[in-house]
Image (cartoon, rainbow, N blue to C red; front, side, top):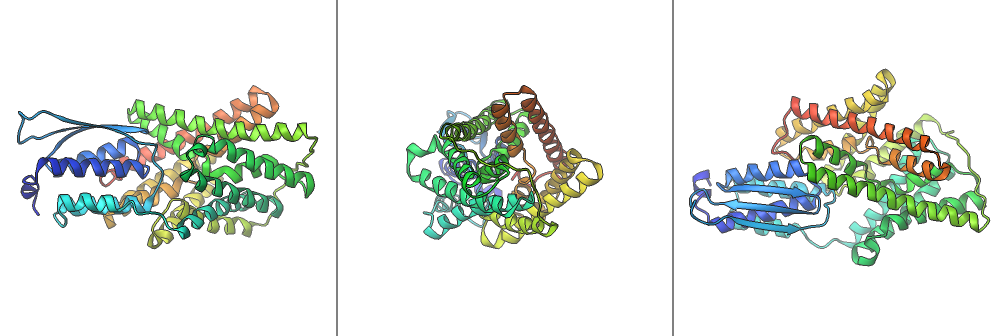
Length: 414
């Protein structure tokens, strides 16, 4: 269907499709500037004037029919919860939009296809999501070369947190305190093991256990939105990320204080005795776990795993040569360029490479560790050091993303 035929589709149908597309992209974790850019591009192809305003908890979409300037503007105000990364559904929504603007699918048919993306999750899918929490925790322990007891403890705690996460989807009263409960559970498991079984790297084990819930990607997206002048969206996302870290810290500190009141004395050591091959094992397990956690389609698992491994290795090698911050910048830059090139080559979202490529670089664990140290030691210098580390990582990540997009512009912003 050529563009001239698309303009003959009823204006209401085109608006309905654009609204549905915006809701799907928001639900699948698209940042404000990318969502608005993608929506404007599709609206132009459908001959609809659209003025979007997007924030992490909703959207305001104003539509105008350029063929009938006398008709009043139509404004949709949509309230939505913050989106979560879902690479499989994002790819399907992108493909549907591509088919509609190319004329391979009708506008009404495209809207129906977007609605059908939200099929109920299967029991097997939920089991895999729970397992992903445990695998990510184990992978982080392996990457840090922690003792086997630390890795096993983090895996058990991560498994329990995965169960809590799934329960919170069907039990509304668990959603608000989820992060605090996760911090309490992770700390309780670590304290019990360190008190009755053997010594642990206490804080590191707790961080590995809850790392899937840490808002490192949200912090990065927030700063990216702020630098692109989406000030309201960036500020709101930054506040949400900080609130998540605070809730995790509150839960963790409550358990640690309670353990002291009960007279428990966990043994704490600082040891990383594992050989180098354990780190490679952690990278393999972590790549697979993040492919599951990011809800990628099975055919994209090798791509997502390769992107996660590539981002980590570039950062590691670059850090050895030029310093940690330079390594993070180089990794973010390379993954952004690779994602945008892949998007142009295969006509699919570059997020399939970009997001897993930087997930092991984001500063969520650093900020959480700093806040725990601040609360434990009651020393502002510990918090200041963590804040500077977070700022350095964020600046390097955002700089890499910006210059990567400058060198190779993103395909339709996804």
